[in-house]
Image (spheres, rainbow, N blue to C red):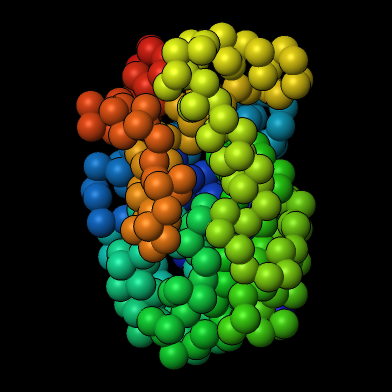
Length: 290
């Protein structure tokens, strides 16, 4: 299996990451199916694409013909089997819960052709924890996009101990053909590269806010102005999703039992209030809903 064999891509999960990954795949010439158990999520994703593609044409980023063909290649369906049956490559982008991912990969293993590569877009969960739920561990790996997936260029490709070299090579080349710059992570490690560095910054930023040393707003101003980061840690977690941060760190804490791995009390408080950041209109900041 190599990148030349990939003609059809299935994206599982039509949320913020999933529908943008799917749109990106369709724009770059792949027949793409995006599936989700939520009809509301699928309708929202479909609406996003119907607005996004004409917007790219207006800005001169896509020709009208390219946008039309991309829209024709992109299909939204609630039927997992329909989406996966003809897929050469699957990208999973569902909630950061291990049991959910393992259950899904078992279903994908049964629904997909034998040659299909199964990739997880997980931010933290390494694929060796998922591969055993399939009969094709050599074709399972992490392919981690960044939010917003239509804009961010980097993709982290993780070579798990079970993953074949052919699978890694195909995923690296597919990333390039999707307009991304792949970074190869040669050994599995929690959080990969970027999120390990982000977590180190966030841990200190949350500590400073928890201790009343500075407000989240002033911490963001300091990081943006003093370190030249485009976005401070609190703005960034609002963008990515406070719920995602909560789930990822809850899973890690469950595994290690180390209090340092648990979600920050500030994150827990926001999660319990349903304040997940931009997606809900309120997190550490308040946003106008479209």
